[in-house]
Length: 313
Image 1 (cartoon, rainbow, N blue to C red):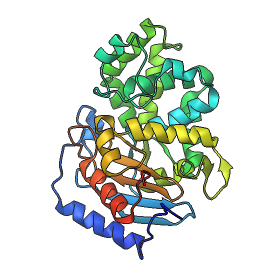
Image 2 (image 1 turned 90 degrees about the vertical axis):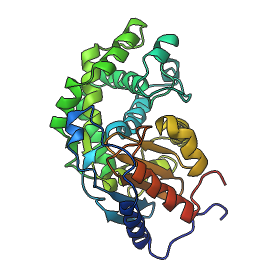
Image 3 (image 1 turned 180 degrees about the vertical axis):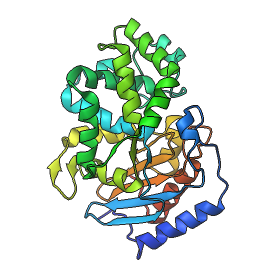
Image 4 (image 1 turned 90 degrees about the horizontal axis):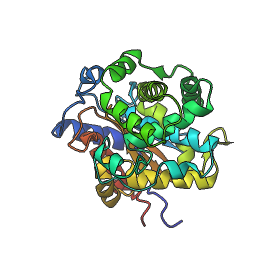
C-alpha cells in the first residue's frame, strides 16, 4: 500500500543505533530549571520506544524510566474534554498555531481571553476548566484515564513535581485569572490550576506513553483491546492539532522535516503519532530554545526519515 512505512529488519537495533548516535551528539540545551524539581533530573538520560499497532514494543536506552510528562498531558486532557463536551468547546479555545511563546500573556489579552489552541498553556487551562467543571474529582478521572490507556495501574503524579509546579506557577495563574476576567474560566481559578499542575506532574515512561496513545494512530480505537476511545473524527482533530501546534514555535519546522503529529513536554519527552503504524516516544531532558528536547527530536527525526514515516506523502 502506498505510504506504508518501510519495516526495519531489526527495529530495536535501529533504536540502539539512534541512542548511541544521540549520546555522541551535543546535548543541545539545558534541563528546565524554572520548575526546581525538574532541574534535578539527570541531563544524560536518553531513551526511545516504538509501539506498533500489532502490540510489538521496541526500546533502547532509558525507555522504561518514568519522567514528568508535563505538556504531553495536554493530549489526554483534550481527549477527555472532547468526550465530555460538544463543538461549543471551540468557541472557548481556537485551533490555530500561536506564533508566540507557549505562555504568552500579551496574545491572550489581545485576543480577549480566547487561547489560540489547546496546547499552549492558556488553552490547556481552559481544558482543565472543562474537566474540573464536569468531573466531581477531575484529578482522579484524569489519572484513571491515563492508567486505562497505558494498561498500567501504577501510573501516578509525582507529588514533589506537583508541589514545585504550584509554588512556581504564577504565570499560569496570571493566564487563568485573565481568562476568568473575560468569562472564559467557569470554575474557581485555584481549582483549575491545581488540576493543571497535577496532570503535568504525572510520571510515565516512553513505553507507557507510546502504548497509551495508540488510539491516535488507529482512528480512535486502542490497539490490543479494540476499545473505541474516541470516534475517528476526534482522532483526526487531535492529530491535526498536534501537527500544527504540538511542538510550540517549532511546530512548522517539525512538520516540514518530520511530518508527523507530535507533542513535547518540558520534562524532556516527545511523542509522535504514525497513523496506521504506531507511536514513537523519546526522552532527553535538555531543552532547546523552543522548549523541545533537542536529542529526542533528533532521534525521532532520524527514525521517521529512515523509515519514510511522514504523513505528507
